[in-house]
Image: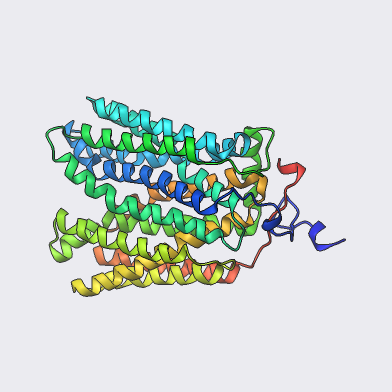
Length: 420
C-alpha cells in the first residue's frame, strides 16, 4: 500500500501527497483578484473600525450599566463565533461569491438599523445582525486558498493582513472625527453602511467564482465533517495556537489605552497616534510579506510568536516612551507574521472540499478569543498592570515551545467520500 493510501492516525481522511497546483483554481488575473479581495475586506474593516471606538459612547448615551455595555461590545464576536463555520459551510455548498454578497448585504442592513436606532436594544440588535452575517474574512480566506498554490498562499493571506492594517488605521480615525459632528453616531453608521454597500457592489461585479471548487451535497453535512477536522493533529494545533495568540493580542488591544494612561499619562488623542503607528507598521510589514513566496511556515510562525512575547514582556518593565515604540514594533512584527502564516498553514492542510468550513472554524476560534481576551485582561490588570503583560509573555513562551515541539510538516488532507 502506498503512502498516499494510508490513513493518518490523527485524521478521518487519508493523506494525499498531491500538490495543490494540480487542483487550484486560477482566475484570469490573480493580481486583479487579490486587489478585489483587498478592497472588499478593507472597506468592511474600515466600517467596523468606524463603529467600535464609539460603541462605549453610544452605550453611555442610554445610561446602561457595565454588564449591558460589555454585552454590547462582545455581541459582534459572539455571533461571529457561531456563524463563521456556518457561512464557511455555505460557501463550500453554494460558492464563495454568493456568501460574500450575502454577508455584505447583512452588514449594510445592520448599519442601517444602527443609524436609526433610538434605544440600546436596537443598537444591540444591529451588532448581532452584523456579527452573524460577518463572514467576509472567513470566505475571503477560503477564496484565496482556492485561487493560490501552497507556494504563493502566504501572498494572498498577507493581502488580507494589509486590509486589516488599513481598517485599523482609517476606521478609528474617521470614527473619532465623524462622531464629533452634530449627527452623533448616525453619521459613522451611515458611512460604515455606505462602505459596506460599495464592497458589496465590488463583490458582485469584480469577484470571479473559482473555476475549480469541490462542490458539496449538504451544508449541514459540511458542518458535521468540519468537526472531524479536529482529529487531525495539525488542525488542532493551529486552532489552539490561534486561540492562545489572539486571547493575548485582544487582551493587549483592550488594555493598552489603560496601560499608557497609567504609565505615561496619555489621553485618547495620544493613544490614537500610537494605534496608528502600530497599524502603519503592520501595513508595511505585511506589504513586504505579500511579495514573498513561502511554503514552509513553522519557522516564521515561531519567530512571530517570539517577537510578540518580546514586545509584551518589555511592557512589563519599561518606563520610557522610546522603548515602548520599540516594543510595539516587535509586537506588530509578531502579529503580522502570525496573522499571515498561521492561516496559510491552516489552508494548506485543509482538503479542498472542507476549505470553507475549515477556515470558518479558524475564524470562529479567533472570535472566541476576542471575547475571552478582554475578560481576562480586566480581571488581571486590577491586580497588577505590569504583571499582566508579563503573564501574556509567559503564556506565549509556553505556546511557542509546544508549537515547535508538536508541529511536523503535514501534507494536505485528501478529499474523501466520508467528508463530502
